[in-house]
Image (cartoon, rainbow, N blue to C red; front, side, top):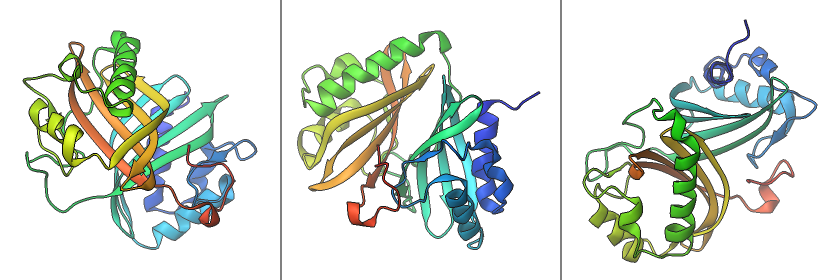
Length: 252
């Protein structure tokens, strides 16, 4: 019996530790589209990347992995040439991976002000029957609050009692979130939502915008319970200038 999409992606990512080129067999070389601007196209590009990373004695931990139709998205802990937290998104077609996106951020050495890391917390999706409702909740939240900056309805989306924050520069609670959204993070601008992937209680939003006037990609993972956002993880990754790209597909 063929392994599940989740299991195949976990095996592919774990193979970064070994540099085994056979791990890319799950990828359809003829159709593969690579959206990391600094990684070359196709199986050759992946094999080269795995080989190079293996030389640094890397460690890969897949903390969370979810499936949404043809998409699998993973939340990962990387220790290779740098220590980073990442989100990896893969699209399957006819049983093979044909497209890949990612978003990486340097992992801080200490927890945030509420004692949370960028990766701790629940890992298993619940409320699988509410996937579409939760996706729509996050879509409305991101478009209304993060893109349009309308904070008056923040209580409608955020659990006022139990909101947990994993961003390394923030702390738990609705008041703290309101403060950073209204003042200290005005330089953080969400401009366009590209993709919303969901499995049950977890929803990943892929957005484009700017941070301190620099072009960036925002990946925000939300956990929803009882129609409220109760937990948030994220990474922010600069979009390299076009002159540095080694493929023509773009970040998004």
